[in-house]
Amino acid sequence: MTLAERALERLEAWSDLSTGLPSCGAGLALRSVHSEIVHFHPGRDVDLHLTEPAIRRFHADLQESTAVRVVPGSRWVTVHLDCETDVDLLMSLVSMALKAHQTGRPAVGPAACNFHRVTVVPRDCPIEPIRR
Image (cartoon, rainbow, N blue to C red; front, top):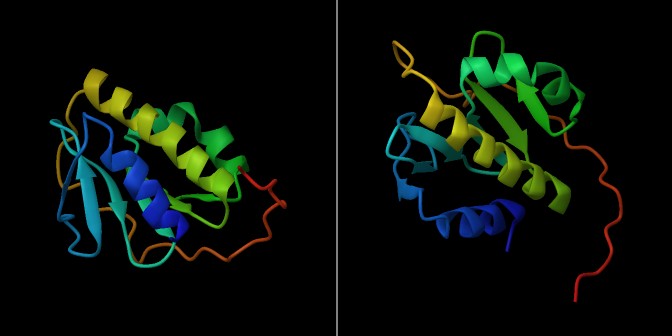
């Protein structure tokens, strides 16, 4: 099972997310009652609809992560899943996104994800202990 499949399986168990087709037409989407939250694209890239206010608030932290790519002007961030810690980061960011969509006002205009707008170079991940 790939990291993306593992992450998708974990998120599909969340009661406030439902599975569907993404508006970009590539992969699979998870959405809340408010909007699309996550796009699982082919490969290891996952786009997350974090919202502009949340991206502004956490911009410095997002920029520090080697797994996250921020596209200027986008309401989405791209998470590249290279290791298990990236899946854990995605879970935390999805939780933040759900909260941002619950408390925020709906954005005006289309919310195109970052599909084909970012290039993520694979990186070395720390060796993780074997989980039993």
